[in-house]
Length: 125
Image (cartoon, rainbow, N blue to C red; front, top):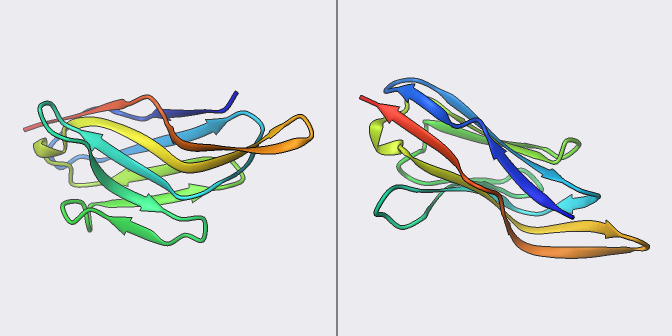
């Protein structure tokens, strides 16, 4: 069974930093574009950052200069390093993979639009 597991959230003061991790478990063949999304209370989910297999990154305007997304394909893990956090960054952060290919017996099968459980980031003023 293939799963994404997000971790690293917590309570931090404004101006502080956090590093979120998203690890895929299971017999992973490869993972395509992976992104971090967040959803604040009463708001719609929004993209924070994404990274393709070749390392091309994309950031939300609100997070440019304040976060860095990276991936370690050997560990099937994607990271989101956030600095200079603001109270408005408070949200549940989710990771997503467009496609995870995994071994299933003699086959390689795809899992599309995989989501991890959220990790809560709370930034106090």
